[in-house]
Image 1 (spheres, rainbow, N blue to C red):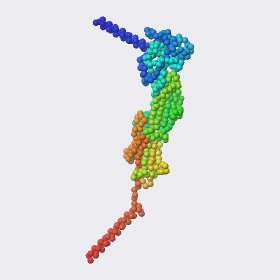
Image 2 (image 1 turned 180 degrees about the vertical axis):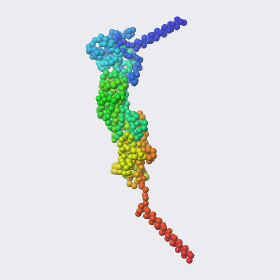
Image 3 (image 1 turned 90 degrees about the vertical axis):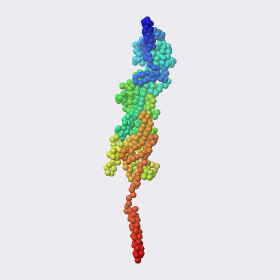
Image 4 (image 1 turned 30 degrees about the vertical axis):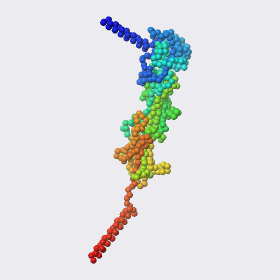
Length: 546
C-alpha cells in the first residue's frame, strides 16, 4: 500500500512539472534574441483592460506579415538559421528596420539581429520599430489575414490592424511584433476616445432651486440670456504609443436661435491652458459654428493617456429662438487621430446634443362678458436675482409699478402700449415670448376707457425637462400665494401659456340732470296723485252727511 501511495505521489509531481513546462513553452518566446517577445498573457482577443477604460477589438481585422523566417527549436525555444521573411524582401523595408534600430541604411542582417538583442519588450525603441514597419505597409506585400490563436508557422511577424472601418470613438490597434513558434496571439493595444457636452440651468427667481448650476442635457432660458456650455474630451489610453502628431478637434454646431459669444476657455485635467496650445476657428463650413483645434496634443504640456480636456464657453439665446418643445439644439462631436501610422486618418465620437427651451405667455384682454377688449397696455416684469438693475417705472405717488407686497420684480421683460396694432387693429391679445421658469409680475399700464384698472398679478412659470434627455415634459403658470388668481391653459408643444385678463366696467353713479332728477319727478307725481285722491274722498264723505 505504501509503495502504491508513493508511486501516486511521484506521478502527480511529474504531471505538475510537465504542466508547468507546457505553460512556460506557451508563454515564453525567444529568438535567440529575446527582443520583442509578445506578452502571451492569455488576454481575450476581443477585450483587454488598459488603464481605466476597456479597449475592445470586436469588429477589428488583422493581417500578419513575416519579417524573419527560421527554424524553430522546441527544445531550446529559439529561432535559428534566421533570414529575411517573405514580406521583408524589399530593401527599403530592411533599411527602415535598420534605421529604427539606430543603424545606417544598408546594415547587414547580422548587424540588425545583433541590435535587436539589446532591445527589450514594450520599450520606446520597440514601439518605434513597429511604427516604422507599419508605416511602410504598402511595401510589405500580401500578408495573411489572421485571428487570435491562428497557426501561421514559425517566424518573427508584425501583426497590423487592417480594419476597413472603425466604430465611433475607436482607434486602430497598435502593431504587434511577435516571435512565435507558429501561433498568433493578438492583444489589445488600442484605445477609446470619449466626449460629452452639457449646459448649466438657472432659475433666476429662486436661489435655492436644486437645478441651479447643475450640468445636464437640457435647460430653459430667457431670450437675451447667456448660456454656459461645457465640452469634454477624454484622451485615449494608448496616447503615449503614438509616434507622430495626435490631432484632437472639437466640432460644435448651434441652431439659429443660439449666438456663439466666442469666449472659449480651456482646461486640461482641471488646469487652465494658455491660448497658444490651441486655435479656434469660427464658421469653418459644413454648417458648424466653431472648432477648437489641437493640431498635436503631443506638444501640449501635461497631456497624457486619460487626460480630460474641458472647453467652456457661452452662447446667447437670440430672437430667432424656437419657442416650446422644439427647443434650440447644440450638437458636438470630437475628431481625433485614430491611426498611429497615418497622421491624416481620424475618427469621430458620436454626436452629443443638448437643448435650450424658452416659453411664451399670451394674454387675452376681455370685458366682463368675455368679449375682446381693446385699449389696454401692459408691462411684464421678472424677479431676477442675477440682474443688477431695476427697470421699474415710478408712479405719480413715487412708488414703483414693479413692486408688489414689498417684492421688487426688477427686470422688464416687455411692454405693450395702447397704440400697438396688428394688421391695422388695436390689439386685444398680448404675447410675451422668450421667457423661462421663474416669477413674474403683470402690470396694466393703460386701462381702456370706462373700465377699472386691474391689480398687478404675480405668477410663476413652471417647467420640467427630462434629466439626461431632450424633452419638455411639463409647462404651466401658477399664481403666487396671496395675489390675484390667474388660470393658464398651457401647451408644452408650442411652449405657450394662455390666460384671460378681465376689465370690468366702472360703477354708474347719479348726477345732476340725469337719473337723479327723474327720480324726484316720479316721487312728486305720486304725491300729487295721492293728494287728489284724498280731496275726492273728503268731498264725497261731506255730501253723504248732508
